[in-house]
Image: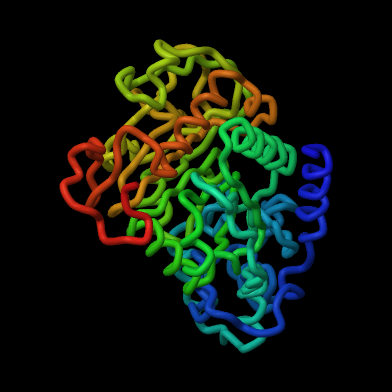
Length: 391
C-alpha cells in the first residue's frame, strides 16, 4: 500500500511541473499580483516577462548569464520562485548605484493583466473536498511545491508520516492542492503538516484561513525544506510561525555527520532521547536564532562535530537550534530542520522526535498554548474560545 501511495505521489509531483502561465485561466488573489517589478520581485516573475529581462541585460550586462538553469526556469516548481534578482546575484551583484537604475527601469514597466495571470498561475483554488477524518488526532499533510522540489525527500517524509499515523492510530489525509486550505476543511484537523513545502503556496484568502486556524488553536508542524527557502514572501509564516530565517547549509560536503543534542531533557518530546545521537544530514543555519524569537528549543547541533561552512561563508551560530516548538496565539507550532536525506526519515531517534513533536502540535501533549504562551495543561483555567480548544 505504501509503495502504491509513494508512486502516486511522485507521479503527481512530476506531472505538476508545467510552465507557470499554464496553471491558471484567470488572475486570482495571489500575493504580489499587483506589485511593481523590482530587483526584489521573485526571479521567476522577471524571467517570464521579456521586457524585464531586457532591462536587466541592458542595465547589468551578463548578470542573467550568471544564474543557473533552475533559477531561470519558468516551469514550476522553480528555484526562481524562492529567490529574487538581488539574492541570486551573489558575487556577480552590481553596485548599489546600478541596482538603483535597475529598480527604476523595472518599476516603469507596466504590470499587465497577462502579467498578473502569469504571477498567479503557480497558485491554485482547487477546492475539491478532502476526506473527512474519522477519528482524532487528525493530520492534514500539505505537499504543494512551487519552489525547490526534492521528490525523494518528500516521498520519504510522506511514507514516514503515514507510518506514524498507522502505528499511533491517527487519521491522516494528504493533499498537494492549496485550495484545500479553507476554514471548512481545516476545522476537521488537529494539525497541518507542511512536508518540505518550498515556495510561496497560498493565496491571500488561503493565508488568512490558515493563519486564523493556527492562531485560534490549530496545530502546525513542518520539516526541513518547509523552513529552508532563501527568500520568503510571507513574513508571518517565516518570522512568526517558523520563528527563524534560513541563511544556508554546508557545501563541500553538503551532507555531514553531526551530533544532535537534546537541549531540553525535561521536554516530553525529547527527554527519552537524551543526551542525543549522531546522524548525517544537510544541516541548516538560521538568523536570527529561533531562541531569540521565543521558541522552545528541543534539539541543537554540536558545531564542533561538523564543518558549518559553505565556501567562504561561515554558517556557525554558536548555540545552534535544529528543532523547536512555538506558541502562536492559541496555536502550536513544531518545526524540525532535519530531513533532507530520505534515510533520515527511518532513523529511529528522529522518527521518535517526529512522533512526539507532531502529537504535541496536534494538542496531545503535556503542555498547550494560550495567548502566545506555553502552559501546563492543568493551568488552563477556562476554555479557549476556538474551534480547536483544549480537549
